[in-house]
Length: 515
Image (cartoon, rainbow, N blue to C red; front, side):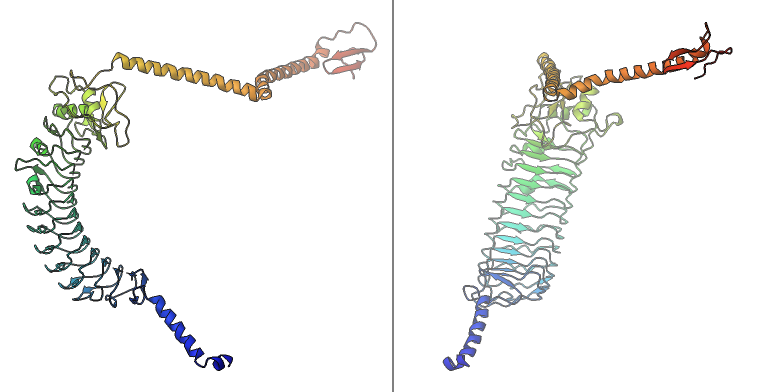
């Protein structure tokens, strides 16, 4: 009553102020309303896992970022994001999007990151991304794309990364990436690619990393990558490549890592590696290689890491070129290189088998190829002085001081190495001896009573056993003595002393003593 007398509209004014405060809390600093069921922070709208079936409305000027992950969106219609003109990133992954209209992203000129992964997109119109001129990152992975329009990425000159993995792509159209001159990362892994077009990667002059692993490629010609003049890393593992060639004479000076793990290579043409003079990492694990020609790696002077494990190495005379190269290689290999055949050598390290079975003692094996000095590691040397690949791994030890001599690929132990081992063994024995002396000295100083008790214990035990035996013998003798050796010499009582004390006896005719 008093409030109404002083301020007649006080109650209504308080209710209005409360309502305005609630509304102001829902508005960002710029005045853009936050959609229901969303969390808004500094013009960033987070509407994840809220069951949205369509894009929520927004008022101008709109947010800078919008996340609609894990919702139920099934279609992106035209002008779907009309109220989001200032978006810089848009996250739509883990929805059920199956259809995307060609003008779905119309007006998003400032968009830099678009994520559409893990949806059901099977087709994209050729002008889908035509207005995203400032797009830097595009993720279309884990969809159902079976083909791409040749002009799909036209105009994306600022694109830096493109993810197309885990789709159903069978081919890469010619000049698909012709306008993506700024692309640095391209992922086409886990698709169904069977072959590559000669100009499929034309225009990618700045590409540094290319992923083609887990496809169905059966043959590979390095000439397909002729236009990738900046590529550093090429992943081709877990395909079905059985033929690796280079149809043109050229030098791929930028490539530093080539991964061919898990393919079907049975042989390698040495001319292929002649085009890769600066290759540092070569992985050929888990192929079907049985031997290598002499000089296969002669051009790889910069090689620091090689992978040759899991192949079908035939440890016969034909393995000598590979063994000679491994003996002189001062780089690193991740896993041991083991023999696959014959049966008596199966599972043996190649270098151990060559040395143990003397496969290359006839001089057929060439001397180790001259390679540039390895950075920091190499194969270890076993006690017999030969090199061994099984003792070298990624975290291996430092390279041995003894290297292969020009006389043969497998050096014998020298006098200096033998002397060093003798000195090392002697020092170890001396150290053990002085350590034992030191421990005894500490024991005497710290616990002398206990030590004396321990030292006297065996003597006490033996003394006690001797006393017990003496008493038992004396007891037996005293029991029989009075009866066997007693001869009465006079009449009357007398005292007999035995081992158990004394007793008073009376002489009787039948030699008995009554106590």
